[in-house]
Image (tube, rainbow, N blue to C red; front, side, top):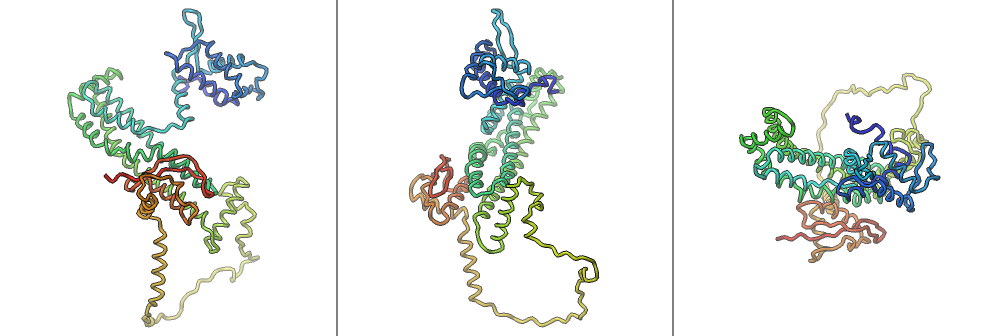
Length: 465
């Protein structure tokens, strides 16, 4: 059980009113102890570190149990209070060495929790390349320690699958968050800055290129299948696993075979996860562009009027902080639709379907000659509409035209004040993640030009050689 290892009040400092102060102090203490040969540091050193923190202007007050801050305490008293609080909650423990000096150390479980929370707060992304390379090298390694190598393969495989599932869920979160953006600026910022910076550039793009599983999977699966048929490998691996896990040789042998086959099955089923990630990535991009197009469109036709109605209703929903299921609570909806009310029911209140009573007599069909001018006009309109579609080929040709023989250029160099150039820049950013395009992208800094604010990027022509 979790709380057989971790104290019940372990998380109370991070759930208290002064959780920000406690977290700052924990990070400072962890940074100091991490620089030592061990996690044990003299208590006075840590008190001096926290005293310096509370003397600085960055430190906030420590709220008490009644909600009032510990304003009457000095900085050193606050430092000692924090250490006592962390000790009582099981984050640290104090030991006295042979010189009667108090040394403070973090609990082993607290170290794991702090590292995880730091990774979350710093938004560290999974490095798939590290897991794949590790599995690849361990599978190719000799027979020195097959049992230990197999355990490392299973551990890295589990971390790889967990990372892919996390990426899959992360894209789903971005799709759900699209409904929260009500302006074009918010949508494009979420797509081009937040989504591309945190998902595409950091994870998805590498997953399709340098971290591509297909480059390493065939040899890994081949070597694992060969190991599953090797009596020497199975015997040595089972002996190591039996010693580590305190199992019988027979049970260890079954575990070794089970681990090998589980890794092979995971590699073979990985295509399903990658396909779902690809589909969600495409769906997010389509949803973002479609929502931006919807907000950009303005006309007096039925679609334009419906758009204006929906935008106005959304603004009212956001203003009143209503749930989208409670649209009927808006007074404006009463004026949009009016239902005719009838005071009493009679035969005229009910709908009477029309029943045909006449005998059907087929009529001769007249041969109509098509209007060639009307047909040509329809064809011209269709060709004009298709010519405006920005396909990957047209975007590639546009990029080549703008590069004009150069090796690279900034997106901000495009003439954004002309026509639909900004829309073309969005498609350059979207299609730039494809492997079959003649250019690649490098992200840059946020810039403002011609009334647009966006994260700039460099367009680099690929070497044909």
